Length: 250
Image (cartoon, rainbow, N blue to C red; front, side, top):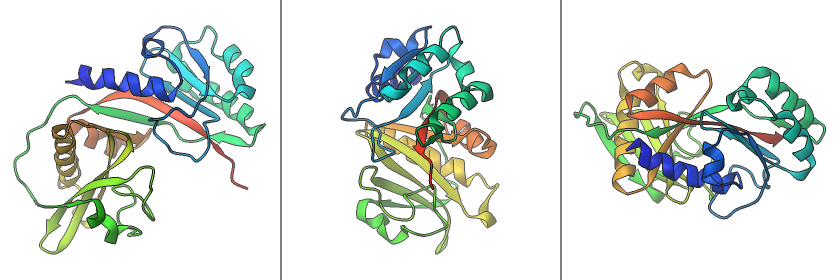
């Protein structure tokens, strides 16, 4: 199962990083000129100034032409994953600052490795499409759905809520970040944590996305151990690491 999703991942990343799937498998780092290719995940309104990714071997960086010479010199003779360590990230960040940009936090990304069967433990309410609208701006759910308002380029598709009578214990949702690529998020209210609700809801929504033929994926900040454990307990496996540049806010 993981292999099938991994092949789809390489095709998607090749689209986003303006390279080939073989470039992502290769042993040599690669620097490409960024492009606004149709079908990519969209997290910014402008063409990427710099995005970088590794699947564990080489690193591929797609960047604006102004960064090409600097990056090609930087990545020579460096093992790919080392470029995500502090020293190299600092060098990249300092170069970006010359152009008014900085690196955003690194994210570890997961793909499903199995369809985990779950026994019913909590009452669950499902919402789809426009049914999600009443929860936009709800500070309890900044990860499960778009916050504070809907995002047209990454629409929320469905939500699973664990219920304690009329009270919501937790919410997991998915947004379609690229065609047929559904990113899962989770929020569990403080008084209901450490009950397994997070992994339960993420597993349910992951399974349903798979049944629809789409790709469920899950991302965490580097140091978020709790979210990492939810991913592992929900049938996900680490697949890639990525980061990118954002404009420095004045």
